[in-house]
Image 1 (spheres, rainbow, N blue to C red):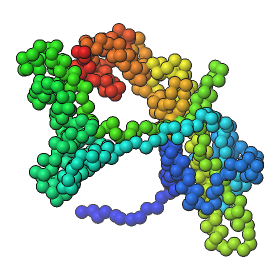
Image 2: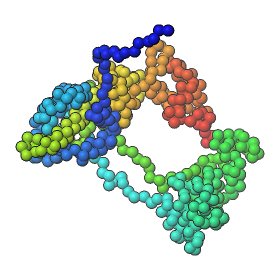
Image 3: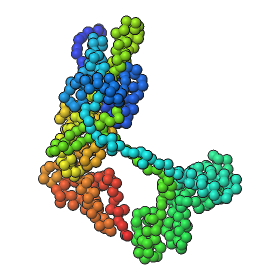
Image 4: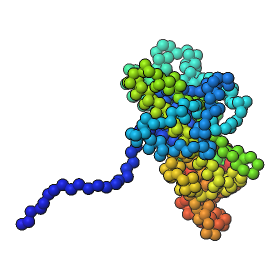
Length: 488
């Protein structure tokens, strides 16, 4: 039996590996942040890195003069010196270059590319939109204080109020409330009808049926049929199956429809009138304006800190009395500050270039509207400006562009293609708009089914499956035809 031989072999080879340095990680992180997160990250670095300074706003300050004389390495419009990630990473990885940074180029402040965005006279006056509103809890406690309860009743009603959610319901079982609060379940049950008398009508209900029944009682008229329908045919009412309800109640269809109309006017969430609307204000990252026959892209740097590296720490490096440890600390912080400034410029420049490419590819959208948006994928933009698809993905997430047609997330402009009968493709967003138009124009008493929408689109040369129509309809928040039908 032959014995195997064991030994060690030494060989040379070249291998390419990606070293994810902390600086590169920071650059990638900055690239994918939303505008608010981006501003927060910059201000955090300002607090943690003493070598970073924010440029003052005074036009007479010496720093402003230095800013205006800053060299082209600070420009973001793509015509200046290229400060790409690869160059920065190479410098951070090569030990021979660690102490050879050209500090002079990075002791100047960062500055905006140009004057852009709406003027200061258009800034929202928040005093006109911010106001205090009475909460649901305050409104209920105010009524409780006026109801003449004794101390024990007051305590029980107050406990019930504290368990009412934003929609106006008590979702926690009374048995659980009684156990948690150390009171009797029967006592809570007895006080609940008093709470049901409070405004808004339906408050303190434990489910939808009870909420509607409470409101029916508040109507104060003959509500026998109304109560019967709520108690026995709520599911059919949700499906708008009026024929089945009429048959079960032995009533005319028109009479059932009239009763149903009253129920539809009731409030299924009585507490939401007291919940402040979650208004979200979006600050665009970039503006697109039409100047003459061309579209101009302008970055929005309004409110972003303008950074520079401290002259004090640069001079400290040259001072003879600075210890070696202090010099090493200052060098590390200066390098971090330099890379942050370069990363900020790279982020802004990449957003600018991606937006510029999107405008070039989607000119019909800017000219004519959403119906004329073209199919476009990440690769189209990546190949156009010479960056990786993943970079395009990061840039377009949580970034917004202000256009004459509204504010859109940059991701909005990327659409898959739907085949047409002529052999071409149509953007999915255009198809969604066509579906929306068809539904808007339909007869509400005889809504159009998904299959009928398919047939209408095919007449327009759009080859689409019924399940795709259903998917797009759901994305648009449009109900199925059976639930869109209206009898009144």
